[in-house]
Length: 433
Ligand code: URA
Image (cartoon, rainbow, N blue to C red; front, side):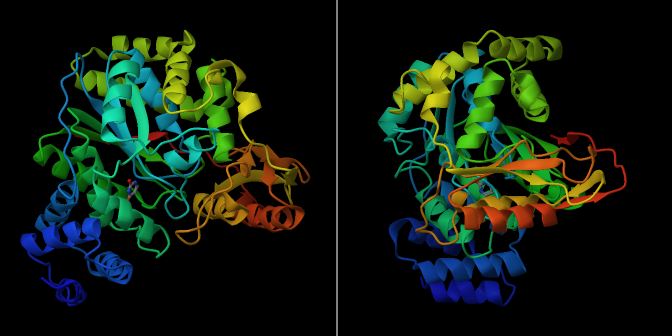
């Protein structure tokens, strides 16, 4: 087969055959498809789309581009995946919570994508940590600790690993077909029993409207259930950052605070994490009140924090993360407030623009080879609906140098609208089964 013929079909709004999409996925993994061809393929799919059958064929081809894991563990193998947002660090808390609740979570995660942060980049803010483990290590850590948040090993969905990095820098993220194939190829290859999908909707998400989010949720849920993995989705609000911090080390710090029991530092992050964990336990047959109670206790007892620290140590990070995280996380040299240029209420937050501020500070990538600065970002980001007086802080900026800080401060002020009072929408918009 010839990659050019497959890309040409997509260009002409035809869907390539199942064999062609499988071949293309294999070619992404083997290198038979070049970076230029992968970029052109992604752009053609973004612009012209695949049929439902084509999306399933691409998902399966990408899943089968590497190993598909099978487990034999004394509890359910479950996981969550988000379609991407800003300040969304749920995974870092959710995985250890579920492990405390008796489940096993082999969480194959991604790096930053477009304006959104990536779980792996966040974890790598912890010194010494290595998320590039072998399949054998992934199995061992999952069995012994109960959770392992890692990169797709060389053998798990290698086609996604390559296409993901290319999409990140070619403006080819926003596609139901590509997001479905990307998320599900790695989740199905991880051999899960049950999956919950957090489909983000709003200014900081790839899907800006409920209709777009619903279409993505439906595509994901249908394709995953069709492939034999019990899957549901929650459409959740991303019209403001989920946690009041955006960046890598700063998001890890917020998660540590929540797991230390200081849930008030990030109430929306806490509530959504509890909701997603509980939903997974409910899908295992547990009663709602019992599921919510177990999840909250896993956090308030400190058990989730201990489990997180065990996972960090198993991945080569510091052994005392549960107690001494402040000393381990890198700090930016320039720290300062961004202030409100007017008086009024925070009436809109452009989450995508805020995410791009973090990329601009060096917290994400503009080209595949960029090195991420783990220390930069925003903290204490003001919430939607808050009343402000001119000069009040909108957030605290963490930058590598003064020039970056000045540029970022102007971009933050432009991303946050001060106007009339607004009531933020519900955190969970709807569930899809
Ligand atoms: N998360 C992924 O893993 N892939 C996407 O395409 C979007 C979010």
